[in-house]
Structures are given as C-alpha cells and as structure tokens.
Image 1 (cartoon, rainbow, N blue to C red):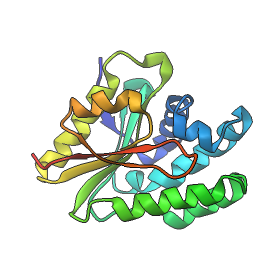
Image 2 (cartoon, one colour):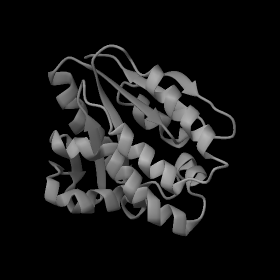
Image 3 (cartoon, one colour):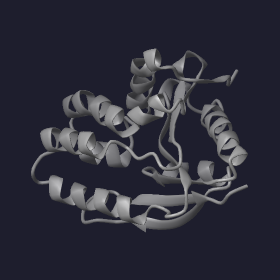
Image 4 (cartoon, rainbow, N blue to C red):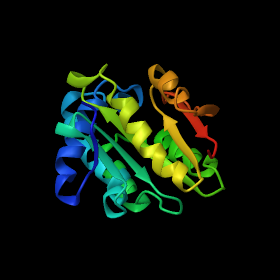
Length: 192
C-alpha cells in the first residue's frame, strides 16, 4: 500500500534517514561526497539544512513505514541558505567548493519568479523502489499544489528519474551545468 502521510516534526530523523538512503547512488550527491564516510557524515546535515522548513510548514510527506519521502517548500519559503552554506563550508573539500558555490548561485538565480511550490527532495529507500512509492508521493504533493493553482518546480539530480517527473506533468525547462559538477535538470509543472 502506498499510503502517504504528513511527516511530523518528531519524525524528522526517520524521514532524513530515508532520504540519505534514497540518494546513495545519486550522481550529484556522490560527486559532492564521493567517499562513503563523507556521504554518511554530511548528507543528513545537508538534507536537514535543505528541507528543514518543510517540517516547519507541514509540507513534508512520507510513505507508511518511511519507505519514501517528499519534502516540499510552499511559495515564498526558501531553504535555509546560511545553514546550507555552513554545512558546505565545513564538509566539502576546497577543490569542489568554488564549483559548488557556482551551482548554488545558478540554482538561486534560475528558479521561477512566479510564486511556486519547490520540491528540493523526493526519494525512496532503495529496498522499496519499483513499488510506486515515488508516484504516490508526487501525486499526494501535487494535489496540494493544484488546490492552490500554483506551478511546481524542481532540480532533478538524476536523469534516470526524468520520465517519472514527466509522467506527473513536469517538463524540462533547462539544465544547470557548471564545470565538473553533474548537471541538474530544471523541471517545471504548469499550474493545473
């Protein structure tokens, strides 16, 4: 069953653990933290910085048993940029930091100007992939987006998932490509 629920603040640790597992083979996450010990030490902190406001705004969702999670940010709500910078400066090697800063600058400057829902993170624990959980999470979150008549936006870090997003009405609107960093595919879903 793909029952989707709102994630409460006290479930934050469980949701973040699910996201950490979901991104273990993600091209961008592994470029950022290529060694296992780096990945396991820093991705939970980075995830918390990126999506913490989803818990505050009650827009974090998960599949029953924490098989998957989607963390949305409503219009006008941005990730905690200072917290993200603090994590990056303390965890990313000096050889990658300038490229990463350029990627984040590009992400910030290329987001839609129109009020929109932003999906910084969606993922399914690899042990539960292929069971429709990603579809269920997207469907659940997009119902909220559609109720408000807003657009939705994301940066897809893994080209393998482009078709999933397209099946829910997202379309590719650009690509962020900076130096040796893996590309981020910008995707937008018009208001429904």
